Length: 534
Image 1 (spheres, rainbow, N blue to C red):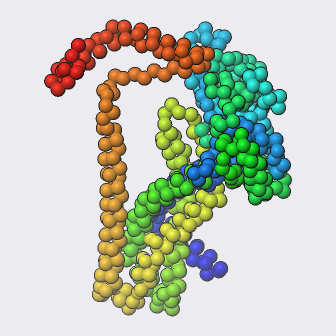
Image 2: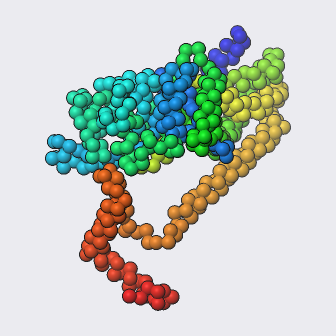
C-alpha cells in the first residue's frame, strides 16, 4: 500500500507537470466515457431501474401472459377488483391507465379569451397516491369513497408542472373547479414537484378510475370484462416475498379461469416482477437495440483510447532518460509498468469524473430531443445510481488498460546505456514505437470509417423514409380531429356533423380555388384525362 500511495503521488505530480497533455487526454477520454455512460443511463432508467417512488423495493408489477406466449401489462377492471379484494400478500393494489381530456377555460379565464387545450390524463384507482406513498404539495389525494360509484365524484389532482404553467402556481386553486371533457372537476390536490408516478410520460391531471366513462365516453370500460386497459401495481406487505405473491395470484387467476363465463377473458396466467417501467417481453425487445447502440458508442471509446495511447507513446519518448535512470538504479520492468499503469488509471479516473458530469447533462438533453413534440411530458430519473457507478467504474478500468498497457510495456523496455548516451537515438526502440503507433492509427482509421459508413447509411435511410411517396400531395395539407363523444354525440349525430362540416369547408373560396387547380392539373395529365375529366 505504501508503494501504491507513492505511485499515486508521483503520478499526480507528473500529470500536473504536463497540464496540456493532461487536459487533452482527459477531454478525449471523457467524451468516450460520457457517451457510453449517457446511453447506459437511459437504458438503466427505462429497463433496469425500479419505479421512482418511495421504498421501490416493495413495489411489484403485474403482467398477464396470453395464450400465444406474449406478455401483456393490461388487465380488465374486474381483474383489478378481484386482485385488490382477495390478495393477502399485497398491502395495496393500484390500477392506472393513460388517457387524454379536453381542458376548457371557465370563469375569468374563459372571458379573457384563453383557448382550450388537449391534456394528457391518467385514470387511477383511489389508492394510487397512498400506495405509491406520494406527498402532495397542496391539498390531498383521492379518498376511498371517491373510488366506489361510477361518475359520482368528479375530482382531480393536477401535476405540479401543469399547475405552474396554466395557473401560475396559484395555491388558492384547491377547491375550485376545472372543466374537463365538458364536466366540472373539483381540484383537490397538487402533486409534489418531483413526483413522476408509475409512468415516465407524466400526465397533466389524474382522475379517479370511476370517472372513466367521462374520460373515455362511449367505451364503458368499467362494465366490460373483456376490455384489458388497466396496468396494475402492488406494494408488498412487510415480510412478503415476490414468490409468495406470484403463487397467490396464480391461484386467483386459475380460480377465475375455472369459471366458464370468465374463461375467455382470463386466459393465461399472472406474472409478478419487481416494479419497473417495462415488462419482461418489452425488455427483451429493447435490449438488443440498446446493446447495438452501446457497441457503436463503444467504438468511440476505443478511438479515444487509441488517441490517448498515441499521446502516451509520444510523451514516452520525452521520458526515456527518466525511465533509463530508474532501470540503472535497479527498478524492474514490472515496477516501471505498474507505475505507468497507475498514471493511466489516474488519468482515466479524472476522465470518468468529467464523463459522469457530461452524461448527467447529456441524458436530460437526449430525453428532451428524442421525445416527440406535442406529446406528454417525458420524465426519467437519469441520475447516477449503483448500476451506473459500476458501469462507469468498469469503463474506467477498461479504458486505463486499453490506452495505458501497450505504451507502458513499450516504454518500460529501456536500454540504459543507449538512452543516457543518446548516441544511437535508440533506433530499435524508435522503430518499434513507430510500428505500434502505426497499428494504433490504422485501428483508429478503421473504426472511424466503420462509424462514418454506418452514420451515412442511417442518414440515407432517413432521407428515403422522408421522401416516401404517401400517394397524395403533402404540402398545404391540414388535419382536423374532433372527438365528438366528449359532447355526447352518438354515431348518427357524429356522422351528420362530419357531413355538414365537410360541406361547409368545401364551400370556402380558398378550398374551391385549390380544388379547381387540382382538377385542372389532373386533366392535364394525358393518361388520367378520361378518368379525371369533369
